[in-house]
Length: 207
Image (cartoon, one colour):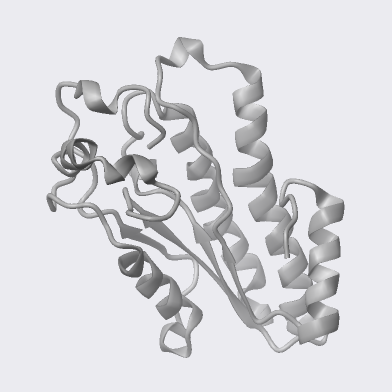
């Protein structure tokens, strides 16, 4: 099912359809997100921020709200688990030229920790996973071996993550194996980012 997670009516509609067809939600992964091309901060404009907020923050909060309504034992639910996809660079300010994107992803971490406390007594766990650069269908640029090599050289582990390496911690947090874990921010970023001289191959890319 497709829908704009930044549109409240669309989120409510999707939630209602899921409930009608599958019953109450017991697991949610908030992974919708957009990024910006890295460029000097002074070139950022208000529309960039509006777009980022709508999908990366508003969408995460709205989808979580609707899931909590269905999961909460206070409203007849059986509980559940939510995992928000954040960004490993929230702990260090992000790559050069990506400060705004990273700052907004930092709000996902704050939201995760705060709401986890509020809904813990309703049998709902909320955690976040913070991936680093990852090979996926959305990262066509990394099919260029020179760009992939340049990116890998900025990661302490010296490589780019496979999707499976991000999926595994997400699935663990959703599972009963993490039944006493809530409000956690799990770093899956290969050790972070080393900031050195800017590689021309990476300038202007969305990372």
